[in-house]
Each structure stands twice: as structure tokens, then as C-alpha cells.
Image (cartoon, rainbow, N blue to C red; front, side, top):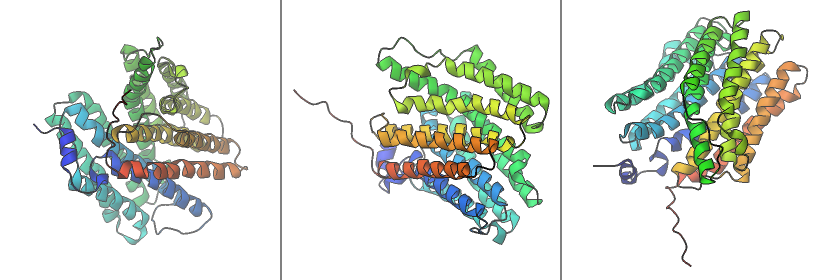
Length: 401
């Protein structure tokens, strides 16, 4: 019976197409940096793209749906074979998915030159194809436990469709239901998947060092926190400016912070590849607190959402890409100083963007946030280009003598 490793080795084409994480992680890093650079040019008043979206909405869509869509594809196309025991998507079928993702980015960029129907079809073709692939694998593998992940990916696809409809009607999609639904789904995905990988990877690392301070296993308390998170996000999507929303978000922030405290993150300072997972997840409760505060502090609302978008989504996905990129490429699971610097740069970007909401006159904070974001993801692309483009490294043999 063919194994995943045998199928990957059987592929004789470009190495970049030998596993889902390779093309999608690399393209995600490049696009995150490039899209932010284009956004900075847009802020100067330059018409750099013939897009039908207003500049803020284009920026929000491409980072939430474009960038995150690529990271999710890379992660799920790599993880689902492990979940289901079925073979991974490699070679030209993988190339077709990559082409659909790229076509969506081009269609959005030149959307002012195309009919709305063509733009929507081109952009949604990728998430719909990804959904079909994931559904086939999960159903065929009878992996019912992960249907929740499939439902959240469907929610992200619906959110992108709502975003398009709002733009087509001449609205402001960056402030609409589509964006809140997409961001809410992203936070829920991090709460669900992050709740698996953060304590799991932390436990593995601490166990190797024979530390007695191991994370608390998943239990009913975690299920209760996830349920509370789901309700709070749902209320925030529907009534973003309501006092009840602020109260629910504050309570959920406390619950999420308590959940994170049970994962022994304070013992992981010696390995950036592990502590960054805790730092990325920490932006989930911090985002709830920021959204709650945004109900009472004028002008803080958009900055508060960036705690989730740039912090939780940005840092957690960067953490996953750097770790999975090393592990699946056969490299040691250790963050070098340049990789750790990527994490620091992104944390600076998030803090600067949030501070800019409280001090709108200090425009240098926005430039710092954009520059640090570009440095983090451009740096990822430079460091991981050779890792993702080359075949998996052979395991090192123990030395004799």
C-alpha cells in the first residue's frame, strides 16, 4: 500500500509541488509583504492598482482572505493526510489549486476592469475547490472529528462572498458583516486548532527536557471556553457596537486568558519556536479586551480589530509556517536568531498598529507597523525560500566514536 512519503518521493517535478505547505507558505509570505507595500503606496494617494475596492477594503480583503487563505491551504493540505490516513495532494493537482489562488489575487487587483461576476467567480473558485478537496478527504477517511474545521473554512468562504456583495453594491466592505464574519471565523479557527497544537507542541518540548510543568490536557473547561468564544464572536458580528457585546468580549477575554495560562507557556522562553505559539494565541484574549475597550474609546475600534487580524492571525500563522516549514522539510525544530527576529518584528508591528489607534496624530506609528510587518514576512520568504524549494533533508546519522 502506497504511503504519503512514497507518493511524495514518486513526484519527479519541481520540489515546490511535492507537498501542500511548500507553495502556499512561500506565496503567503511573499503576498503578505507585497500587499502591505502596495497598501503603503495607496495611503500616499497613488492609484497603484485598477481595483474596484476602496483602498482600505482591498487591504483588508487581501490580508484576511488572500493571505490567510494561502496559509490555511498549506496547513490543511499538509495536516489532513495525517488526520485521515489518506494520501496528500501533490504535483499538478496541487499546482492547479495554487493557480486558482493566484487568479483570485489578480482578479481582485484588476477588478475595476472586469465584470463583478467574473471577479467573484475568480476569487471564490479557490476556496470552493479547497473545500471540495478537504470534504472528500475527511468524508472518505471518516474523520468526523474535523468536520468543525471544514465548517469554519466554509464560513470563511461565505464571508468573502458577503465582502464581494457589499463592494458590488457600493458599500464599505471593510466595515461590513463580511469582514466581521471572516475575522470571527479566523479567531475561532485559532481557538480550535491553536488549542490543539499549542499545548501539544509545548508538551513535547517540555517532556524532552523532563520538565514536570506540562500543559493541562484538553477537557470540558476548554469546550466551555470554545462555546463562550463562539457566542461572543457571533454577537460581535451582529451587534458590533452594543454594550452587551463589550461585556461578552471582556468575559471571553478572561476565559481565553485563563485557558492559555494552563499551557505552561512561561516555561518555554528558551525556544522561540515554542513561545511564539503562546504569544500568537495571547492575541486572541487581548483582541477580545481591545474590542471591548473599543466600545468606549472613540477611534479605537479598527485598531482593536488589528489585534486579532495582525496579532492573532498574523503571528499565529507565522509561527505555524516557520515550524511546519522546518519540520516537514527535515530541518531541526529550532528557531535560529533570524527566525526569532521575524517574531519580534511582527509583535512590534501589532503593538505599533494598536498604539496608532490611540494616537492618530502620530502617523509614524503606522509607518513603523507597516515596515515591521513587511520585514517579518519578506524575511520569512528570504529565509524559507531555500528550505521550501529544496527536497526534504535526509535525517542525520549519529556520529561514531
